[in-house]
Image (cartoon, rainbow, N blue to C red; front, side):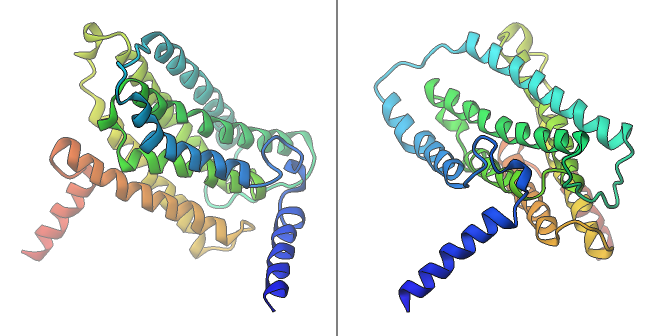
Length: 278
């Protein structure tokens, strides 16, 4: 009985990965199995929450200013390229905000979109360096649960997107996310110039607000498919939408801790509710 159940699980796994996934990406690096990505995500969490701080416990912080300058330039350019490519599809090629089915054909344009989705996945892996730099500089106060969950979950989540739905409606999430990251890494890049520039970086809270706002837009864009027919897998509608809900909740708590008040959007609705209850 136990062997039969185990055999059914194995067969189900192979059926899902080999026959129900996108055949075009099967041979691409890291796309054959979820386990390498899962291993990297678990290793990341272990390093930044335990092994890294333990390693740095009796060491002086490393000076990573030159590295961080280069790293932030890289992220601005990488995310900027992905954003421009996404914008070309959603605006230049007339993608529909209401329903954009996935083209699984091997024509040049759909394959290019799938390739861009894979590069977006790689981009999420490179963002591990955000936290590694905190560890090496002994900025352990910056390694919040929000930060670790956000960076630790995203590569695995995006992996499933590339494996099963590399294109169509889901690429809107990547478009917004890379656009926000261009702004975010530009802020970090300016911060590497030190006190001369840091005093002009008063807009940090607005970067956080922008991150939260883009999660709200992603929720609306994803959950609208509940009310219309669209040739887009409903499971991934929930997958993307609920990720946006989860990260919005985490960022709300982070905003309150950092700035001592509710984020603007929350404050707006709280005020509306209060007025109606009077």
